[in-house]
Length: 142
Image (cartoon, rainbow, N blue to C red; front, side, top):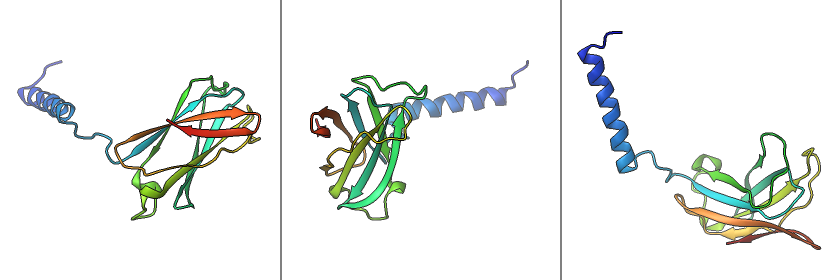
């Protein structure tokens, strides 16, 4: 297949644009924040979250193993939050989140954790541990 001068220039231009973006960070995820949940329990196959702004429901979602396997201890689940998930002008300084682990059929909530409150900021990552004791499930921020 013959390459024309024009196609070579276009290819080199695209490579240059990609290299520029990689070096300058254009497209970096600064318009989101992430909550990393470390699964420090056994018996959970999925974990649902519910987030709040100043105690009012903001959104919810879930994470699970795609092969429907038990989430192994130490597994880190990521929940990413973008502006579209919140009402316009939402005060992220009043963000909170709780978690509900589910059994292998995702029909039965094993329990619900306490809500972890923090002042969320776009571009940041927050780590929380999902734990269990004789009193139930609870969430502990790093």
